[in-house]
Length: 487
Image 1 (cartoon, rainbow, N blue to C red):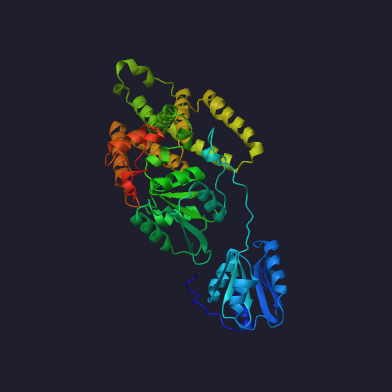
Image 2 (image 1 turned 45 degrees about the horizontal axis):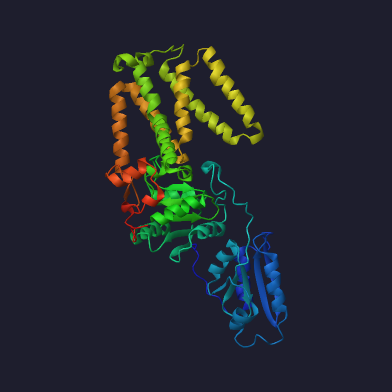
């Protein structure tokens, strides 16, 4: 509700209610806001509709029912008769607040104003332009479900309900932002989730005070997560209903924002961002191997390039058998400048790929390969070793399941590189120390960010490092303090 507009009780006069709604909704000023004046059973009525949001067939059916009313049939108890007899529809409500009716119409439902009734009937016969629930590009699996969340909140809640048929599954609806009045759903399993965690999530969302959620779930994240200048995400996104359902069974709380295909998972630790559904779509030993390879790729994306630069500048740190790693043809440009240039160039290429139409993406990749992989080496701009080690780091970045985590790790890699260039070994060690301490000090809704590494839990850390068989995972994560700890 817009805090600057007080509640406006509805009156029994159709003219007053309809005039207020018409003024607030901009009837006659916006072509898609429709006011339809009708008369059924000898009683004047008005319908307020947003064109494009209403299911025409349902509204026509209800209007046809009302057209069969006899003269004077609504003289006594018109509200009760309309609700219980003449409007045979499941999703219908009422309100005495005209401002609430305005917000409802802008969300999609149709408002029915009846002369002599001090209530506004809200008929939820809305529909939205929506794409099909296709498999998300960032969370593809070889085998498994191919459906994914879409931009409509009611579709997303249905996809979760399809997989979680628990009677204690709760979908709490709230509207956030004074002007956009964005629909948000807080989803959890009441018999599993920690009530304190649910309260904290609910409180953080209700505390959001802004005009509009411009970027949907990303704006919500910035309000509820805090630590605005820390690049590491303390919530996790997923576009897969099966991943969302799996976290619900562990005791997590989901936040679904209308207009976004990404569902927020709270809380999320550092290790949550390194897991992928593909690990659980294979046999346990294969999944454990895939997880190990992914961890190695992620660590390489953070540490490999700064460490190689350090060994190049201080070859005495290398033992005898590894001395070949400290030898490279440096080229005409200082090594530090080469690495920074290729880091920035890779980000430029990534942004160009995002803005390039798919029909031209192949051409862009070909040009980039020729420029960076061939000509840049021949003219002495980059050395072969720089391209090699940066390519390995880039592969590790792309292998990181969480896009937000990969961006944060990239910034850490650049910071380690700069510290190594300025202070050598001391800078590298200092950077690692500060990085670990900063992660250890972080928390996500009261959950330590590095758990189960800090504080250490053997059983939980074993499950992080090794993809355990599902029959053996008979306990929920203890750090979430679930009501029902047993699976």
